[in-house]
Image (cartoon, rainbow, N blue to C red):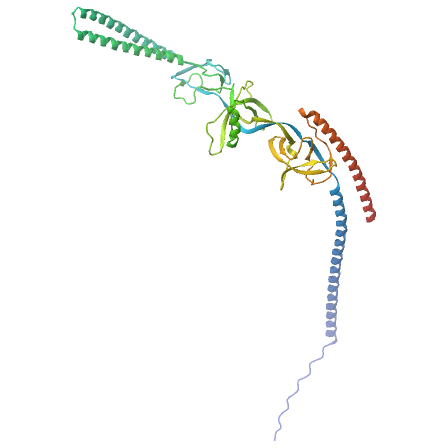
Length: 460
């Protein structure tokens, strides 16, 4: 009996060589060294950042303490300001408006007959008087027409004289019963017809005489002639739109300006009382005074699109400083209020409490005072309530002021004009305040120096 064959066992794997084991060992050591290096760098970087944040926090805390001390010292330091006195005087009520210089007369000189322009008798820009010679049109055609009309008139006058003589004879014969009444009536009608023809001839003669007058063109108004519109030698007609020249009346002249309808009652009240309201004309910048005049009249209706009213003021303009169509700033003096309290406009401030001013106190501090504003006239403003004449208000250096803040007067402003005596007294009091403030400033400066020296010692 045959026995089954036994399976052959697998041959064992060959053992790794010594060189392979050594290579794997070096790779493992390199991996471990790289991991250690990365861990070292991470720990070092995060440690430096933590230390930097801590140092910055400490420095900022110290700096904040020093900055807070400096801010506190600065807040306690006096603020340099300029003061101005509150005065009492007259305040004009002025209305400012935009206006245009408008001549009282602008005439375009046109020919009234057709003909050749023979002569121009003016210089461009010349000042002329009414009746001065301007131009001459060829009169010869109209002289011939005049002679013809005069001949026709003479003929018809002779016919009329004959008809009148026949009528007188017929009337005598009618009394003698030598002619019929109808013949006498016919002669009367003939005389009437001839009289009508003579009247027409006389009108024709006057027409040609007037045409001869029109050939000699003269200035219709006083004024200044502009640029010549046509030269001598041209044929001019009545249909020419440009005419020969334009004459503008310059003296006197007017300014037309507009005001809001809200200002009309005050102006109308003054005009109805018979008062003459002065008007001053300034240049485009509103600085140079060009002329002074008076308000003459107002328009008869308000412009509904703008809510304004036109007014006209007359100016003598003898120096010809106002020119037609020139833009000007008109200032109308409506009234003058007397004995009002006045402060510089720079002293007024506006905030949540309304309008207020800083009033200087005898102890070199300021207090906030709410005021009620009145009329504003440029750099001056009237105050209805809140301050009294003689007090000092701050006009410069109000940026960092508050209630009770200390001040140091740098340059007090003295009043002028009729307030001379009070202004001198207030200027003297201002000088005393300035001296006291100066002493306080010196002591404050020495204290600040000692404080700075102490901080330097602490820092060292």
